[in-house]
Length: 432
Ligand SMILES: [Zn+2]
Image (cartoon, rainbow, N blue to C red; front, side, top):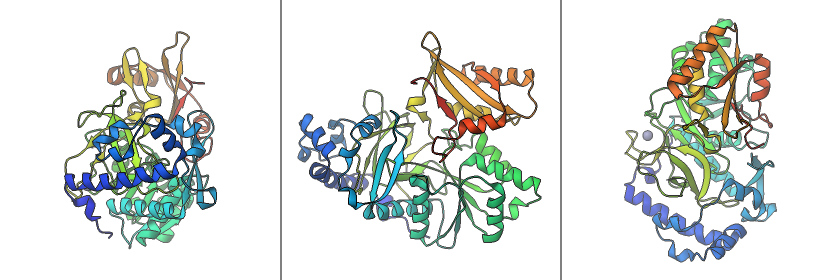
């Protein structure tokens, strides 16, 4: 197994000092090569020589997805012919944002994923089965492949969907880990039950889970996590990442949040006003990438609401861990004085075995306040079930969304993202 990098076991003070040295390198690199940050430093009269500590970072204005969209080309620090891999990430203003990676960036991405897999116990003797797409301008799929290669582990690129092909692959190649969207694990369980496949004899020992939360904020399994564990007793590791960060936060054996890798990223958890939130409280993740050559980001708002945990982990790493995604800031719903994020609603709906699939639509009503419409597919629709779900929403989340029964094909169509890379469970119509 890959050793834990020394810096991840160092003291908090050592890690801070290490990051401050890396930050200085980044600042002078941006000052020399990034048109966007040169403008930012000039406009705000920032002398980068005065930014010496992580605390000093607070003097630099925050950049957002909107900036990245509007000034996309200005973020590039290398000429276009240095870019090897072109990927895109969904923009907030329509057009997707282009992110480029140089040869060196691909090495960094490989290192990032290798140490992240190692967090989840993956080693040279393991074989990973990739059940997500590797193409479609998607960074994560490629990162998984490069990370496996760096670890010298095996990887089988099956791609998304097709339970039959997934099981055929499991039988043929005996993989030990799946890289998977958690709800798809339930589809695999269902297929196995219908086809007399003994899942516990499959040899799968763990799953690296992306896209959906498995745990509550106290790290106990949420409804989806419990459902999976009851059906299939494998280890579940959450991983959280984004294209802009080019960095993953993956859970270790302790499964107490995704570990930050201090050699790759600086993270801050801030409130709406841009101030650091007190330890253990939720706030928006703001990141600074380290070691990125083509498109480094300095104090970039991810739009993701999380809680950071800083106590030393029993796995030996002394790095910050991020808890499950509370929600996307853009998808925050203000409902009659209550603030709510879609993952809490997903969690509640997952508790109803009668609900086969669902999508959440958010829209503004005629008086301009948020409304929620939940479309569900059920095998046998009944008024009683709808009442039961509504009651649960009222008592647990203090909201009463509209609920509509739909055909499962319609739900599937609605939840297929534009690029078909990963399912989208939320359709936000408020800014259309
Ligand atoms: Zn740990």
